[in-house]
Amino acid sequence: MKIYRAKDFRDMSRKAANIISAQVILNPQCVLGLATGSSPIGVYKQLAEWYRKGDIDFSETKSVNLDEYCGLGPENEQSYRFFMNKNLFDNINIDKNNTYVPNGLEPDAQKECRRYDELIRRLGGIDTQLLGLGHNGHIGFNEPGAAFDKDTHCVELAQSTIEANRRFFASEEDVPKRAYTMGIRSIMQARRIVIIVSGEGKAEIVRKSFFGPITPEVPASVLQLHNNITLVGDEAALSLIPEEAF
Ligand code: GLP
Image (cartoon, rainbow, N blue to C red; front, side, top):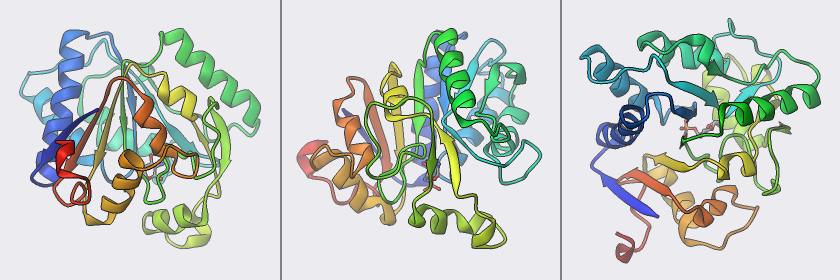
């Protein structure tokens, strides 16, 4: 595992954006695995800025997102499709037809999850997967206890995740209780993983995930087994990991 220590959120975002832009420049037709949440917002801003300057061209790039809330459509401002359009796709020259997010409006979970797995397979798999980290160690929406051998599936969100994501909704009752998410196996099959973490609030879960035992109770701990993973964190988020790790 490579670890990059960044000064702050801005620096973390720039470093992670650098890795993604290198991927797109080396292979313009690559498949990016993308994430939502507050952590990647700075990365997306940076990529859009470099696009505007003429430094990156996304016209042939494809993307697949990790997850989507069940019951929310693309027009719903809290949906992850809406988030991706607003924070990235509307600001770069990617062809929106080449951007994929699970369809939260498909009521048949089985059907939607198989469709999404098939889509990822047809695209040839994910070249670089960007990840955030939930406070309880979730990646995508794979909550503690999630089996390591799952592909895309439907999950019941943990109460702590509902509470953490409540800030984006009018009230807790409005936070969807279920989501479609790529599974741990889908994530682990990405050829490269970049995980970004920022803020003191993530320090303990970063330590547990990367320096603790590998266990489904801390879903992100499985990433220790990936052979091409880069952790990019700001000083606060990396503050509890052993100095020898750098
Ligand atoms: C959500 C997303 C995850 C994300 C996590 C952390 O639950 N489904 O993909 O990594 O939140 O969010 P944040 O980056 O806002 O801390």
